[in-house]
Image (cartoon, rainbow, N blue to C red; front, side, top):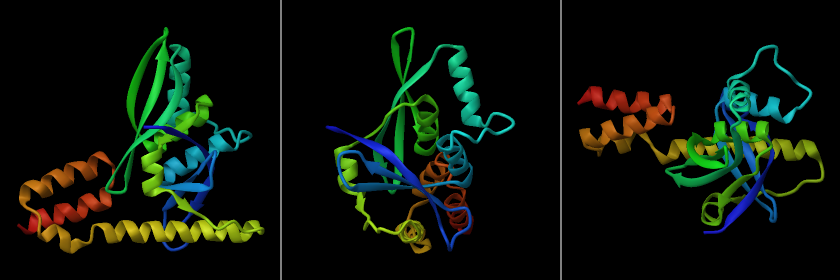
Length: 203
């Protein structure tokens, strides 16, 4: 499978949902965008890394990881968004220490926050971009472009909510519900976990 390099186009926020952000990744040799819904903390960390002049008074979590890695000569060489399951992106950090390469699993938002701090390139596979990539209309006015991105976030959030409506949990077995609960907690999707827990409690 061929890798496609991505750049960060920017971060957009939802005008209708509090704390909802979308990280917009741009195909380097093309026009497709890869939007990824992320949390407020990760959005802040990525935004700070993008704005080189902003320096928080104390290290953020991703800054701490970078300082720790520097101290022990660990380098993040690249980030690969390697899987997309039920709207959730999975990523890997390709790290190197003493010429030995290691692959570390990471949430995509964390991986990108670290990629920025290590100046590491971000890649995804062509089939993921084919599946989740979208085309955004380019507007000459920046304000229009930003508004379009924020509308995009609202569309993404609506799609996410439509993907797992409450009714679908009623058709699941208890074992399936427990598996879904574990998956939601692992992905730190606590809102979804709460809904699944409620359905389990009803049983």
